[in-house]
Image (tube, rainbow, N blue to C red; front, side):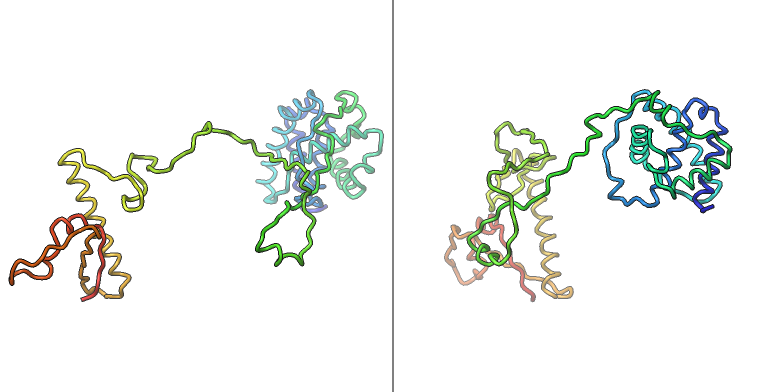
Length: 300
């Protein structure tokens, strides 16, 4: 007996010892064992499927009685045995639907001889009665619903591409694209939140401050009072101090001080020297120094 079969055997013992197992058809346990063994040979791509629709009465029994009981039994079995196995609810429901819909055939023809032999070995170890899926199908007749119809997806194709620059360069590559008359379907639903009004992203989401600075087209922050003016001035001074420290790291000065050079705006006027005591720095008006927002740094 395989290692995984010891886990299934322990799970069966715990399930059959529970009281809810008497209210669920025994065929559901047989299909559950078969689906666990089948998962060992099914790839992940083959397990990707929609939920199969079964009889409402059988679906209620599976959700309220069988699955909670079998999952609890499997949890206890995994804890005691120290091994685990895969469980896929969609594959299990699809297998139950497939067996009940083809109940006239032998079970080994539906699930395969190797799987049938392993399940029969587990089944006979508890001396259980043979399963009768015909009775289960009569009690809960399967119906072919739209969810059970297999729809072959339309193959994906590339959209047509034309560009004056790349067309000649890519002319050697011949790939079949979608026809222009084909309707391009978009599964994503569109929502018009703006109601035709263009959104202007000019302010921060958490306050009314402009995102762009004044020299890049942003709004000019005008102080409302003296206290507000001082806060703005303090914020600008902190920014300039931080910018100066960052500039020092880019020059490779290794701690040497940087000289600030004030560049006045173009519209600023330079006053003429009044006497011998005036230096070159006095030629720049006080207004140009105060209004200038541009700085350069140089190493002493």
